[in-house]
Image (cartoon, rainbow, N blue to C red; front, side, top):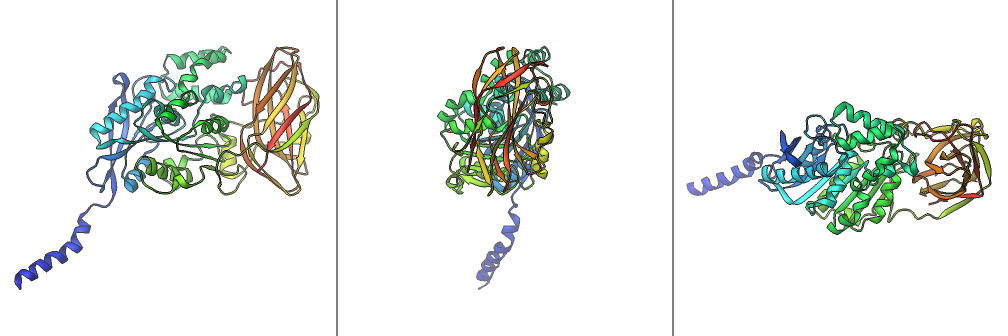
Length: 497
């Protein structure tokens, strides 16, 4: 009897004490120096899960953004370690802050550092080398995509506010994205140690020969490595903002279309890095919530249903909930005929694309668009075409295309196309835009120019208006003051949903 009572007491005690003795899921963090390519010291926070057993644990590697240090993802890392049991390494990219080496613009050493971090985590942080994901914002996102091509251990990536084609981002249609280039160059000088490639790029920009920088783009752009990514079967999540002033979304949408493995595309209002900003700090965020589910499915192997959802998720740029599509919206819709016009070049107008980082943020956070008062657009220096009016409203979904015949009188002329939604008083909101530069005095060019993609709900009774002028403060304008531009019969294709 006594033995029975003792056993019963032990059993009852175990019911109440054992759960309390088991540590609740959590995390621990340490600051580490990791040997990168060539032995360069890479400084990072290593966040390890607690209460998840002894490992090995799935691994997430997070390279920092341009000019940002390793604290960038610590909030998200702690959440992922605690809630999903990941080892997360959030580190400062080569050449910035306290990491060693020089900035090589996502060159071989920077991309190789991702693999070195994976090696270190497997050897020193109980990480599982067969379950690896890479995530990042901006510069870190580009590294994530490039590492997916270079290292087959990378099973999944989440590339947020990324570039996929560096030249297309910073030199769209042979027009320098001046504000973006200057922001990047200044930030690198203030927070890092530019390497030879970046120094030459800066010198070329300052000397007006930015076109000489273009050849470095391919090796630093995931668009040129899509075959390797597809061969590795990497699961790719892409998240960008409609108004990203540094890495515009058109190149990302095109890259998405070339991927053959598991893929997901999320585009939402905002500017560069603003849509996912709070999620990196561990705060609630739709894009980071999808990122966590993405890694749980394709790194950990959980069956959480994300692969059964429609893969294209778009949030209207002028307000509204997420909408899902099975694929990128097809370019069906309205075709607007544009009659011939002649304008003088080199003068600014009240039409422009806004200010990098600021204008898109205002759109994303407060739904305040870049506006225009159409009656004040000088028709002598800007071509203005009225598009369709929509008595019942309409949804633009996809990539508008301008098919234009243009004859400049100067050797080089920069042109800026703006598509506006305009109300009855002539006040317009910028829907999308695109720069393009034409060469050859007196030579007629027939061009097919995709504007940046968008998802935009046109209000009842409003119309679309296209404006093309020759000066925009965001870009390095090559228009000659007093020259002229003649537009022949052209057309605008507007994708409708």
